[in-house]
Image (cartoon, rainbow over all chains, first blue to last red; front, side, top):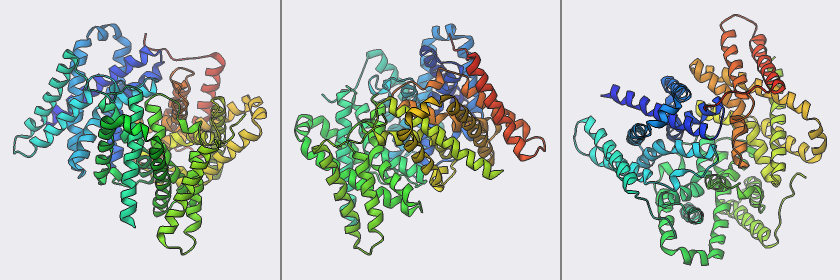
Length: 201
Length: 201
Length: 201
């Protein structure tokens, strides 16, 4: 079970990092820029979460596999860019798995630091979406997430569902998987039916 | 006394958060964007101060009332936008109280972490103004504070005055209130007479 | 030896801060903006490194000389702007010394926190280049380093060389100076021959 989560975490990191490397490529950055943007897209959210929680070593600093996952992702993006772009649907699916996973695991981690439920939910959302926010700032565009999809809201709903499920004595894997799947479904439906949140008019 | 400071802190948070939510609205962000921008405007400066000082839990992570203050502010901005905009003068007054309060309390907190006077003053300024700096970066504009008003300078003057006053055995409330009022007066005069700092030509 | 490193560190801080102040001037910021940009250019990279490593007090918070070095730099930029601009070559040389020094000392510091070699190298690069990244974001341009020079790659090579040299029982000063000189040479050659890294096409 925990091994599966660990592997999914690394896969999520690779997918997030590929999306970062492709963004860097869209902005005509060099190889160094691509690594930095890929790294921050994949691991920036978790880093902010860990700094806020005072959790040290920060995830990727204590386990070099995350760094290798990012480097692998950039290498794949260099070698197979055209092929990867043609896989947009598959990539989107893994991206959605990654977001769900990061949101739920982030919430779980914050609870371990005795945070209240509302702060734990925030930490879940931060883990899942802030990497993308920093990426957008670095390439000089207003963060997509402030304008599009109900991406973050899906994470929030999943985190809330997780906090409800831990009240029951369900098996661990169900407590984790149900909210992850819930986040995935909301996001897929949101994209399909073009749901969006209202703004302040 | 401390209860009054706590309440003023929350009121300052609400006012800062409303100004953040209105900014998000100017940039046509959705509800999620509005909450994030409001949150960061109100609590970003204090968060950076606490991370730099290694003060954990970070203010709003240990007291959920700050989060509720932000959510309330966003709700108010949704419901009463037109009315709030018509209150610009009142809002500006509370904003100025908030800045003065955050600057002086930030300085005080840094002293508690055995920082030197010059670093403590910096922490005061960071508490008061960096939320606005991050807000501006997130919406993609060069931080206003680098171009306009002598806003930060007022905070610096107030922090310095606070450091002078603690040398004397004045009652606590005077030591706090005199520099806050001083910051307010400088800022109000600066806006009225359009004072500004010279740049490097 | 350590005194020399300390002095070079302060000189590097002054030079980085001057380049920050001149950038602020290019963007027509006021004096406060100039101090903030100068400060962040010079000390931002080391601050991020220290926060990631959980090293407290953060460098400049425990030694006020760094703050004074920044203020001196801004003052010099105000008083002698024309003269400093005419010294671009000398400034560039000191900037290169500063980068080499920050990269190697950052790597060394990370090793003291029991980081793996790959993470230590990252911390070296972060120390040397992230101040400039934040400066660019604050003035609203895409970080130069993602597009130009093989600046960061030079730091990476120097950090790697340092990690090789510490395997041998060389005198301390050689272990530090050889990689610093190596970073300087790569950068100077890179600028002279306009080397650059390929991007993802």
